[in-house]
Length: 213
Image 1 (cartoon, rainbow, N blue to C red):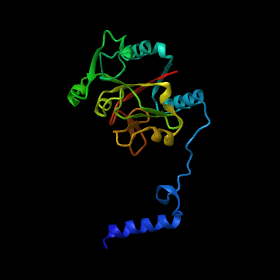
Image 2: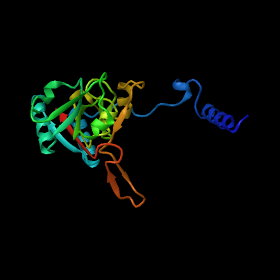
Image 3: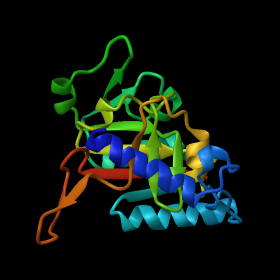
Image 4: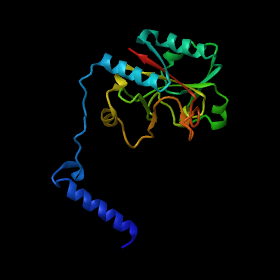
């Protein structure tokens, strides 16, 4: 028996001892919280609180004002070019007449070099987790490829009302684990040994979120 076999055998034995064999999921208890009694307004308030705590910028608007709000966000940053998933709702971009919009299509992907010259990216999200302030992109319609959201310095993410859930278990239940999941909790950042925060390390330096209500 190798050391690896010995370690795995001990783990398996510990699981059999700690959990009754008649439990589902291989005998592992799953009694964590899976539902929430918060209503939609309370979930939005929690999501906004978490996003601001992570140093993201937050805008809120009704569905009818979304194109104008996207335009205001882009103009406020003085962006000259943006990348968007090719399947992003074109109605959201109707006010960007003076901005170069570069679609990223599955059959014609923008390269890292091209994305490096683009000022920002606009996407939607698959799920937004209120409790953790996490935006999850999965490559589905409007969320874009992983590369397109990691290279530009600015990311504008649009959160639709039906995409907001209370916590991580609810989010995982909605997602397809075989898809490429990107989880974003605030702008890209890290801290050095003295806890000095550095932003823009492995993704956008600025994250802005429009919550549609």
